[in-house]
Structure formats: structure tokens, C-alpha cells
Image 1 (cartoon, rainbow over the protein chains, first blue to last red):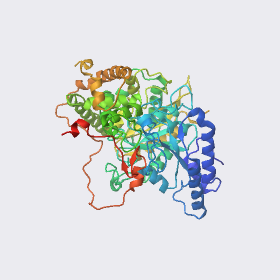
Image 2 (cartoon, helix red, strand yellow):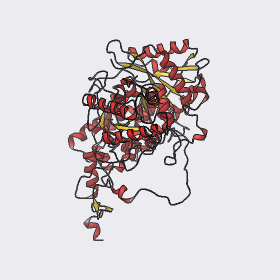
Image 3 (cartoon, one colour):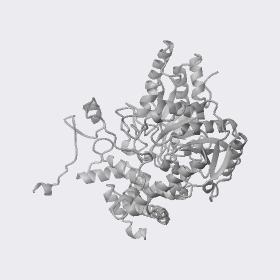
Image 4 (spheres, rainbow over the protein chains, first blue to last red):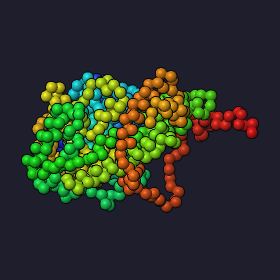
Length: 490
Length: 103
């Protein structure tokens, strides 16, 4: 046995515990993969070999004296470039933060390190997590490892491409409107958007604070559960993180063992299937998944999310409004880029002109507009009320079913430059963003391969707020029984 | 509602403290007009009596005891500053203009 392509965290943990591999050998393996393949895939912005190898040696030392911090001690994990790792750059793939060095670890990084996991390089992303294709990075163009002419998805496209191409065994991403699930689906790996509040956002550069959530991108559902157990939990540095005492956590529950679909109700929202522009393989993936769930003893029901079609509108008003406020901090004063100008306002304005890319400017301007006097009630307040209706739709749907089955994207990964307007790009997020508005948890699981292109297609499963146990149990059963077994790159 | 009429891109850019050149301004005005026209579908909804949702969870202010604790060192917090004075203060451009100083 040795490290192979798409090795899971579980497999690596076994290799370590049997002494067949060391942390040094595993980390060397992934570093050489990055050195050989990253020039063509461009998933990783930067990695610090010396720091990684030092951490690996320390892990091997702990294992030698029988003091491992967890079964996963010594395994490297790639990290999206908007999560702070002490002493390393955190640029959000933006020129405005090009040389920013994090003075502290994000809580998720601290928790990873406490379990012996080793941060392995910063992954490329759409600037400030704004985008669905990674084309908005200021630094490099990540390609989809399945086909270099198509996008890896975004905004966590670097993380998803890194896991798919086996440059890392797993990665952290962040999901504000689908930024974990969509790239994971495009790259044929698993991506989990946890319920809002499940994971501390301390040290995650804020885009839209009421929607942002960090989550894992992995080779298997069980790896997503492993990382969730390590990184989740209440944190006093983020008052929106949930108090563990009442939480129903991913792995630590009775339902995880002997989980069965017998008696479970899987709901398919009628609105999500009968829409224009839905790709044939995507539609087929949902229909076949429903048949599989039925064969395994679940009941398939049609549910309704009547306000679902307003989610893109509600989202792009709320997310940009929050972004315009959150990104006001990038003013050239305390950190980041500073452009000299004759006066203070001139300095702010030219720093932001030069430091932000076009999509970030577009969203800040839209957010400023919807919050401006005279338009606040017509746009921002209406969007927040629409959000209430979307949340209520989910509550009602979850009274009728346990898990919702839907597509995760309208099509498989699209070609570079094929979305000709920003609005077209926004509409490609239709299946993912309503989950963020409601605060629920959702996961994509690769299900099919496109017959013409061979590109992977995922289904999306959504569960009610704080119901990761049910979500992951259902996803794992699907993963074992899905129509296509192998999602390793050819 | 005609968004072209009120889409004062220069005014919004000024509020957002972003300089735009003419070409960029035109492109963004056209993009934003298209996006705003799309989100106007929110106008179809009957929203009387519906409470707005600001957050995905019920969050309230959480207070901690007012006790001084160790925090980051000054040097660490200043390490990313673009310009320093005496190595321990953030240098900023002049905030008050010469005209105002006269008062």
C-alpha cells in the first residue's frame, strides 16, 4: 500500500498508523505532485516547503513516542487563500492584499493544527470569493483537471482542482452562495456547506457575513465528516458560531452508525427540475439518484419551494450589500496596498481603483447602490423579506421530507469565457444560493459522467439547519450505491 | 422604475470610494443596469407583514466580562501597515485640508 491518486484521509491515516508511510513521506509526495502538476493546473498559489516539512518531522516525532494528536496527525490539507494561516500570505487572490501576511491563525487552522493536520499551500480562488469560475483571480487561471478548456468552478476552484488532481488529499474552502459545492461538483469531488454557525469564521476574510461558511472539499463523504469533526464547534471569537452543547454534530451521533434510509423521506422540489436550460445529464443524475434512494428503502416525495426562483435576486442584493460594508476596510491605511494621492479621499479611491478587480468593484458598487438612501426599501429590505419567505419554504419542505434532492449546478463545468455577462454567471448559482440564504447544510456528491464530454456531474443533498448527521449519512449511502463508481481522473 | 435614469455610476463610485475611468464606468453602468433590472423581480412579491431576515440564525448580542486580556503585540499588528512613523505609528495622509485649518 502507498499513497495513490485520490487517497482518502482514512486511507492515509491507516498508512500512518501501520507505519507504511510517515508524515514526511506523505508531505513529500504531495509537494512533488504540486511541483510536477501545478504549472499546468494552477490550483496552488504558493506553498512553503520548509515549513511543511518541519511540521511533518514534528508529527513523525510525535508518532514515534506514541503521542499523536489525532488519527490524522501528519496529513497535509490545502487551504483557500481567504483563510488566515499565521506567518503566511493571505491575499484573497486580490492585488489589494498581495503581500498581506496573516498575524494569526484562523480558528479552523488552529483546530487543524491541534489535530496535527498540516496546512499545505494556499489555493487559488475568485478574488474575495466573488465568482463561479476562478476567472476572477488577480493572479492565475486555474483549469479543471478533467478538461483544461473548462473552468474548475468557483470561488473555491483552486481547492477543488487541487483535490481532484491529487495535489492535496483534502482542502478547505468557503461557501457564500455555492463556492464549495459548485467547484467540487465541477471537479468531481465532494464539497460540504455546513449549516450557518457550525464553524467559526474567525480568520476567514469576510465577504457576506450572514452567508459565509467554511467547509471541507474531499475525496469522500466520510472525509468531509472527518474534517467537520476537527474544524467545527463554538468559538468565542465568533459569536455567531453555535454552542456545541446543543449541537448535533457530524460524527458524534448514534445515527452515524447503522444509518439506514428505511423510512426516510427524500423530497424533490418540483421547481428545481422543470426549469429551462437544465442539462440532460444533470436531470438524469437526479432521476437516477431518486431511483437509487427508493431501492434503498426511502420514500420519494415531491416538495415545493415556491419562492426559490427569487433566490438569485435576494442573494445578489444581500451579499453585495454586506460585501460593500465588509470591503470598506480595504482603504490603504492599516494594511494592504496604498496608492499615494494628494489627499485622504484620493488615497482611498485610487488604492481601491488599483487594488480591486472588476467583479469586486461591480459588487461593491451594486451593494452601495442597494443600501443607498432612496433605494434601501425597494431593494435591500425587499431582499431580506424575500429571504424570510425562502427560509419559510425550506421549513415547510422539511416538515414533509428529511432530505432534499436537487441538482447542484444547471450544467457540468462550462468553457472559459462562455458566460458573457455577469448576470449569466450569477444565474449559474441558482441551485446553491438558496441554501445559504436559509442557513441550511448541503453537500454535493459526484454521481454521473457526461456521456459526450466525460465531465463529472454531482447531485446536491440539502438537510435542515444543524442536521449534518442526517445529511452525511444519506450522502454516504448514495456514494456507495451511485451509478458511476470511479471519479478518479483518467 | 427606469434604472438607467437613476443609475448614477459616478455618484455611487464616489460613495464607495473607488475611482473609475470612463471606459470602466460605462461597462459597469451597463452591467449594473442589467443586474438591477433582473432583481426588480423582487417587486412582484407580496411582502406585507413579512419580517426581514438579517441573519441565518437567531443571534443576539453576546457579552463577555470586561476583563483586560493579552492580545496581539503592537509590532505584529503594525507589520502589515503600508507606511509607519517612528516604527510604531501608522502614517496617514493629511486628513484636514489647508482651507479647513484656517478656521
